[in-house]
Amino acid sequence: MTHQSERLRFAPSPTGMMHLGNIRTAFMNFLFAKQKNGTFVLRIEDTDPARNFDPGAKKIIEDLTWLGVSYDEGPEKGGPFAPYFQSKRNKLYQETLQKLIDKESVYQCFCTNDELDKRRARQIALKKPPRYDRACLKLTEDAIKQKLDAKTPFIWRFKLDHDKKITIKDLSHGEITFDLKNFSDFPLSRGDGSFTFMFANFVDDMLMKMTTVIRGEDHLTNTAGQAALYNALEAPLPSFWHLPILCNIDGKKLSKRDFGFSLRDLKDAGFLPEALLNYLAIIGGGSFKDEVMSIDELTNTLNFDKINATGQVKYDVEKLKWINNKWIDRFEPMTLTERCLPYLKETYPQVTDMNLETLSNILHILKTDFNTLKDSVDAVRFYFEKPTISPELLAKFENKAQLSAIVSELLEKTAYPDEFQTLAKEKAKQHDIKIRDMFSFIRIGLMGSTQGPSINDLLAVLGAQESRNRLEQFIG
Ligand code: GLU
Image (cartoon, rainbow, N blue to C red):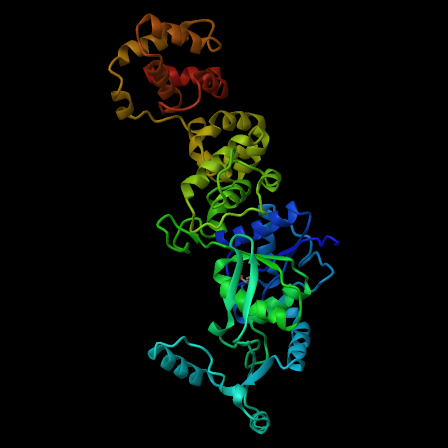
């Protein structure tokens, strides 16, 4: 048996902004293709010109590039199955429709939307499943001819075999069988001659030779109808993986109202593409020894041959922040500096003229304290602006006078600043003061906060003179 190479695709409709759900779909297709040495295709489903907010898919491509999710075939890249925009593939839909006409698998439907709505309402009132009643399947050839002569608008419907059951392979559920008697003869074209999502999406998957289709589980009923189309044309059926829909922390479908739903929010807030992809790949995917993984590590670790069927997958921004923090920690100092720069420039224009090494040293000692790149703005504030000392913070120290005296004594020492921290520790011991209190007190003087980097690190980044000035002013 010759081994067929895997082909997967991401098929977004350019009707809105990229959001977590479709990024997750894109990335799972990408990872699956990468792990199997297959091909990952980008196809733009732009059959609805009125809702096309992203002509040429420029934004989609920009977002995928930012994320680091590259494709092998698609817009701007081309490939053996071009074009990769549905709006340019009408001829192929027309040809495939003709094949179905020749096989008598489709019929023309002249019912108006009004008529359909009324019949639907009646079926619902009678507690029957709302399904097309096949009125137009019963039309005689003469009746059809008359309607066509009168230029009555019509659509093409697919004639489902209601006596049949159809089975698909789903990577997480195993086999799923659909009883076609529960489905309606669905439309393949619209009154204006354009084609429906159901049809164009199927034709493209078939012609582009997709072997595995990974998409949201909201497409499960579409899969049933589309599987029937594959059968009608005797085309090989791909495997599917229907991904559980992402929910918010309350278990409701993730929506625009949830922070982080749109990629734009996450970018602006300083989340890293590495962390975002990492997070989306591991949620709902079982437990991992080390959850912080790069694309390559994920490719080697995820087991697509043994996918657990998960119920709900919850998006938890706190976990995402945790992963982001781990990624920030993982970066080389200069890489971190470059990533933080755009955020820092907005608040501290002076960073433009600053020595990058100095900035990188500052960020390096603070990086465990920030979860997003944007958090770096607050974290470095003490460096650019003299700290304001909050009386509440100081009020916690009962022995302020004693602590100040020690700091003053330490500033006299010639070994300053190299041995400042060690001597501060010794002095604290001598005076029976908790070392933590001693250091917190000094930190307040240097940066206005009790928590933060080590005293040595603070002295190093602030410099001897500036540190001295701050401490002198602090102890008055
Ligand atoms: N354009 C469809 C969507 O964005 C694609 C669904 C699919 O992956 O088949 O939902």
